[in-house]
Amino acid sequence: MSYQKITNSQLNRLSIENFKSSDKIDIQIVLDNLRSGHNIGSIFRSSDAFLIKKIFICGNSAVPPNKEIIKTALGATETVEWEYFENTLDAIEYLKTSGVSVFAIEQAKNSISLENFTIKDYPKLALVFGNEVDGVDQSVIDACNGCIEIPQFGTKHSLNVSISSGIVLWHLVNQKIENLKLNESK
Image 1 (tube, rainbow, N blue to C red):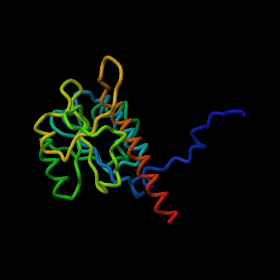
Image 2: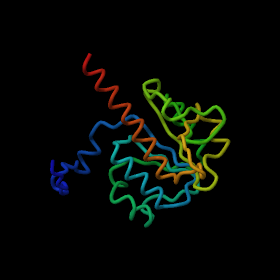
Image 3: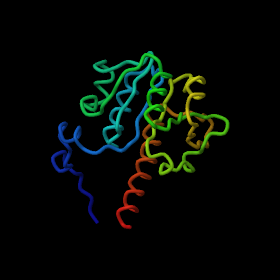
């Protein structure tokens, strides 16, 4: 078997207009005071790749057109819907009153290990990712429906927030796709 790299023209990428009008995965992201524009840009790119519904940028986080975000997002700020909230708790309240279940991605007592989290129990879901040093603020955790934790086995027990978002999004989007396939086959 031979493997040949696929060229950009062969990837069948959506245009910006087609992306905006396409059905999204009903997952939203809340960024709780991220300090790095590069991390925010990376999360935009992952959100574009996985057709995530929306990003809420909160607190002291940079917002587009910040040059670090633009550099890392590679145009995803033009495709992924986003909104700024001065206070993360206000964003969570907005989501919860809209019928969205909100989970912090954080190492916490009684957290649900990622492999045990079942997305089909939460048709509308938002995920809160926290500050690179302090993680998700405790007051924000208290306002959430729960916490999801990525199992880790090394000495650091810490992942970069953009890496964490990619892992969690891939895992949950994969579950959504599997659920859709199961429903279509019935």
